[in-house]
Length: 128
Image (cartoon, rainbow, N blue to C red; front, side, top):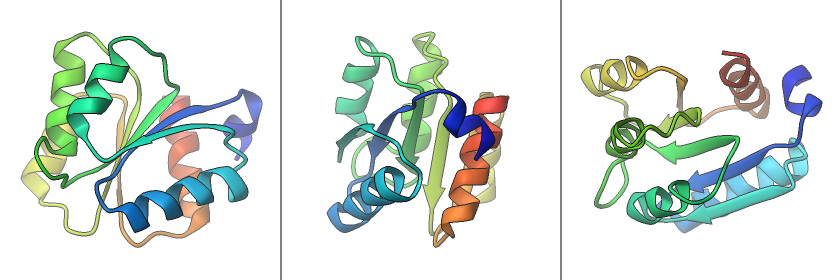
């Protein structure tokens, strides 16, 4: 976690499953030392926040109710928001994943994942 400890992270977690969202928030805070975490179950709300607030990284579920994580990514880039995005999914289709990765500053991580995989992926995303 060399890059993660170099500067404080401000993370926006977008996950519509409350159990997964809470677990991810706890993992980021306790295991990875992220102090500033804002969370929502809605990509639409996340997009509103991203237009006014700065985050170091967005962690979003690939498949959200309503606007998906990929749709959120495309909307962010269309508005000029270049915040790095980590997309999480238990079932990621290749076409959508490739579409997301073309946007730049994006990583995809399949669920379930180990803490070390999350840390390594965030490091790689922040270094890009």
